[in-house]
Structure formats: C-alpha cells, structure tokens
Length: 253
Image 1 (tube, rainbow, N blue to C red):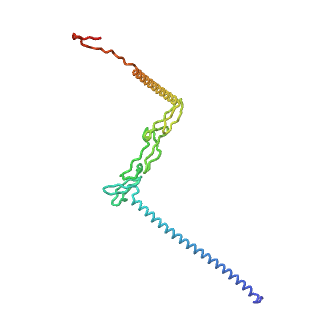
Image 2: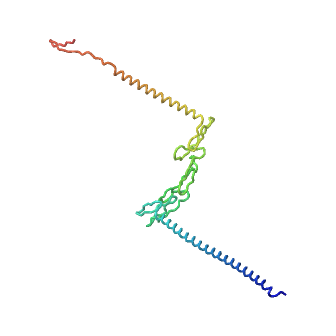
Image 3: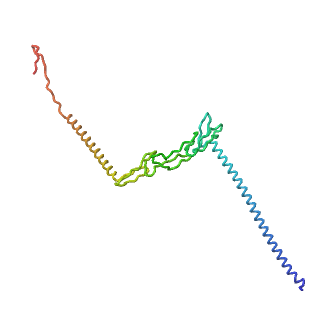
C-alpha cells in the first residue's frame, strides 16, 4: 500500500489538469457566446437599416408619382372651362376630369386599335391592315396600342414611291436574262432593256444637238441679213421742179 505522501503529488497534478481543461472550455464557450451575440446584433441592425431605406425610397417614389400626376406630363386640354390632363399614347380618354386636372380617366386601347400621341380622344384609331387583296403588302411591324401597323412589299413586289399603299409585281425577264434583280423599291431591269435605253438616250442626244445647230444657223443667217440691209446705200430720186409760165401753164425741166 502506497503512502499518502506519494499519492498527494499525483492528486494535485490531476486536479490542476482538470481545472486547466475546465478553464479552457469555459473560455471557448464564452468566446462562442460573444460571437453569437455579435452576429445576432449585426443581423438586427442590418434588418432595421434595410427597412428604413425601403420606407424612405417608397416615400420618394410615391412623391415622384404624385408629382408626375399633378404636373400633367402629357399636356393638357380645356373642356367646359376646365383644364384636364391628356391621356398618354396608347390610351384614350374615357371621362373628363372634374375639379382636379389629373382626375382624367384614361383607358388602354383595345386590341386592333392605337393612339400614337398624347390625346383627349374618346376612342382609339383602328390599326392599318396589310391584307388588302392585290395590294402586294405584308406586315413589317405589327400594330401596338401606341403605334400603327407598318407594311412592306411582299416577295416579288416593289414600290418606288414614298408612302406605299400598293406594291406592283416585279417584271419577269424572259430569255434575255436579268441585269438587276427586283428590290422592294426598284423594279427588275432586264439585259435587253439596257440596249434599248441606250439607243433612246443616244437618239435623244442627237436630236437635241441637231435642233441646237439649226437654231444657231438660223440666228446667224438672220443677223447677217440684218447687217447687209444696214450697209446698202440709200438711192436718191430726182426731184421735179414745177413753175408757172407767163401764160399760166406749167413747165418742167
């Protein structure tokens, strides 16, 4: 059996190690608790800041919206002595305002109708149709509530004017072949047509030159004739002298 004097150092060492381990665990738990507390505090602060910012931005948007509505951004019109706000493009006026200008009631255009400008109209305009028979058109841009339909020439059709309501069929070249193909704005040019066109142009130029030459020749002849007439001497005709004789008769030399 071991004596108490030998057991005492071992017991003290074990107790020291236990106290040390417990202190380390307690320190770790305290640190974790502080970290957790800091994270919770940061989370609540962040949520509060976001809520305050959203509330402030919401008030700003509401104020801007009220400012736009009260400013009549699309213009005004006068009806029965009252000034009312116009409706925006893509809408029509369903009822006039009462005492407040921005009290005008506006309704969006129905399908197949549009208004491209701010207005006070009681209805929207019907969209343009590109499906007219023999018009040679097709849809380029579909109709929306704020813009009319845009049409273009269908395949193998062309239009060389500004506002094309009808497109003409492209010319079909026969055996002579195609010189320039048909485009949406230009007709087909066949190879034989260039020779004919050159002949017409050449004939026209020759005719103009001949007419100019004849005109110049006629002018020169007229001017020379006029000069010759001015240079001819003037003939002096002999004058007759008449006198009365003694017997009262007339005598002449």
